[in-house]
Image (cartoon, rainbow, N blue to C red; front, side, top):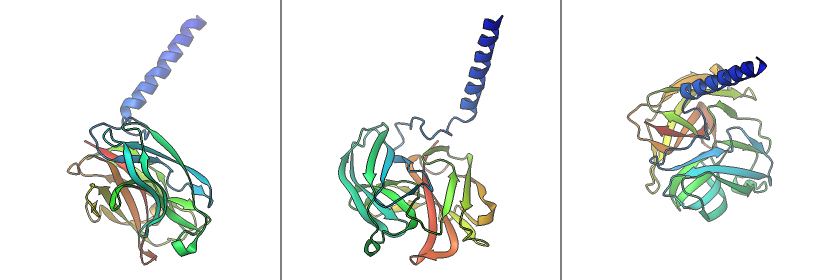
Length: 251
């Protein structure tokens, strides 16, 4: 009798697991990315991860099956471009998970490497051609920053279907401010980052902390889309302060 109850319990748990998988087929960032979707998807660091200067950081990326070499991996700040080069001509395993480790640079104000919440890893195909980017993360102890807690970096999103974005203003810096949502993807054209459209959503109060976003089905599948949350009328380094995370768009 006890044996039968155990079998029934196991079968029930398996049934629940299967139902969850089918109910949320694209919610897992570590899912296998479709081979026919081009680009490089980055899943770590996560948005809002915090590090010290000189600390080692793991970069996890999934290149498409035709990408075996990355021209350059660098550190950059939103709107300030690259501030430090980690490595060039990096060999990667096409179509597979790649985990790389890099040591963050020391603080250097002359190169804009200071306490900041807007650092990214930049992935380049050539000297002037982006392939992708990581989520924004923190180095040092800045007293500002918007943290995006959902979705996870590298989420696989189906076009035309909504997904939820959540954020927090941990330092209470943006009371009364609004957010504009931009969507970028990197086409592999020199110096060209495509923004589609100019404003996906705008006028969202920071205090709301959450919003459902739908990427129109007219946008092409790609591994290197980046959702950007810009804080309207808040400038840093002369441009709108913004934070982002990468995702993959599928049909």
